[in-house]
Amino acid sequence: MDIARIYNGQAVRKPFTGQTDFQFDCIVVGLGTAGAVAAIAAAQKGLRVLGIEKLTCMGGTGTAGAVLGYYFGNKGGLFESIDDRSLALEKQHIYTPSRGINAEAKKYVLEQEALEAGAVLRYDSTVTGVLLEGMTLRGIEWFSPEGRFTAGCSVLIDATGDADVCAMAGCELRGGRDFDSQAQPYSNVYVYLDQGKVNFRYTDSGYVDPRDAASISEAVVSSATLHTHLRPIYEEDNRMLRIAPLLGIREGRFIDGEETVTLENFLNQRYSSEPVFFAYSNADNHSKDLAFESEFQQRWTVASSMWGYNFTVPIPLGALIPEGYDGLLVAGRCLSVDHDMAACVRMKRDMQKCGEAAANAAYLSIRLQLPLRDIPYSELAAALHETGCLSAKDEIRFKETLSVHDETNPIVHWLTNPEQIKRGLAGNKPGLAIWSSFLLRDSIRAQLTKWSTSMENEHLRKHAAFALALLGDEAASPVLREIVREKDPFVPKTSRKYNQVRGYTAIFLLGLLADREIVPDLTSILMDEPGQWTYEDENKEFLADSYELYFQYVSFSIMALARIGDSHPDCRQEIMEGFHTLLGRSSLKLSVTFKGSTDIKCDMNDKIRKVIKETLQRWNAKVS
View 1 (cartoon, rainbow, N blue to C red):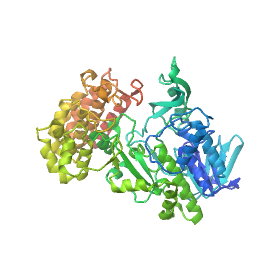
View 2: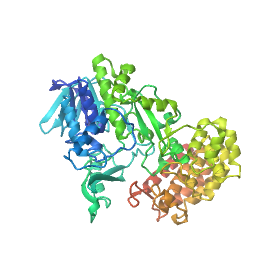
View 3: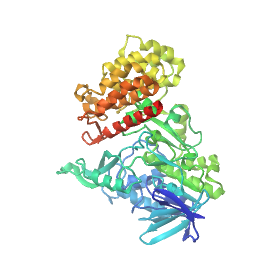
View 4: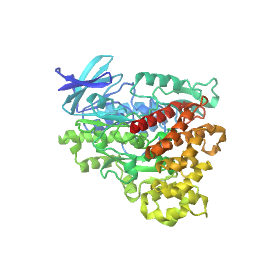
């Protein structure tokens, strides 16, 4: 048997010649949102469970992180009874009432549930190594104020949120988006007394690397001292109670699992038929530099303005098993999804379900003496149905629809009737019709071409061109050029928020089409000043002011020009001159704000320079 530890960021294995101090059936590392439920569920199944937690409480984001409410996610499962018990405890007047789940009550209930089920809890403890036989996990090493210990197990559940145990084991990990590995912004929760009840609000505060202690430390201090949190005066109806000691980190590392769930596969209707739970939300990406996100996410969020549409996603057991490993599961946000899908599959309800699913998989693996990947799905599904973690209601909703829901949450079917699509494109909520056209492909192309040349309705003509461009049809180009040249300020109302301006959406689509004719117009945009832009205040949550609108035009223009230059080498000289002129402007100050504030800025100049530098390097390599 070997012991693997992290040295200078790398997993290093050495022979383990000692004896383990303890033996358990299942060890859960990290007792946060997913891990707390995993430990309780495993212990309730009769397993001998050890729970390791670096903090001094259970519950993670929902307790120490002070996120007291739920943002979507599916109901059902063990966490519901835990929440009910927390509410009952609150009503006994032991705790100040909360708007949402009472964090202090839930801490207590989680501990009591775990201890009543027979779990052993170790707080203030950090895992420092893992025990392995080949590719099978056999235990952990951890350090606490009492010293260093080891424990063996049959199954280990990594619920650290950032796949820390998996990293020690040498699993393949990834994180962030392709362009710059940037994850979503983190937030810091401010807890206050609101008319006699505990309430909370948050401000997205920046970007942080959860694997970097210095980055975490800086984020904790800087976010807590923002004017949104640390104020000179607190009013009677807004008495500050505390700032959450645990940051709201939405995204860290992901494992490469036996199965991976991606947004592109899901929206192209490729998904698992053997889910262990269903996730439910929109693709809730809080980043505002969308031009640097994946092309597919931009097709959904920018071209179609579908950010606010919710969908139900089946998550298979394979997404919880690191590829090639046994005796190891993950629970929580580090499961095997891509950056695009992680924005949906991270909600508190669903992550608690993920913990319960992992616990049941561990139990069956131990009871049946089978590798995790070989557990009979029928038995696992039956166990999860018993508690409601896997819900028949969610399965029916998923199977009978295409799993997409609008902002008011009724079931929404993709459109297939051309007249319905035409009406959708002609209105101010065109997103569903645009995406339905994308799914219909060639069967709707002729109608889209006809509508894009029709003068009967401006929305119909322009939105039909959007749908054509998503199909890669150059017939859309004349209309898209017109939209760019007039800097069309129209903002659709497809989503409840985060809709995208028609002017720069057309730029994105012309980049997809590699339209060389638009090059002079895009290079001209790089020379413009922010004051020339028509800003619609109704879209304020995404665009705080005209300067942010200007950044969107500049960033989408640069990305489109890079795509055009990739396809048309003879356009590169003109594009490069535009790039150099932009970078040479001493007054260039590009920034975006964060969700929850209109004045906390994130500088974007370095990202613009990165895009241009990488583009020019790529072209020089091709020329040489």
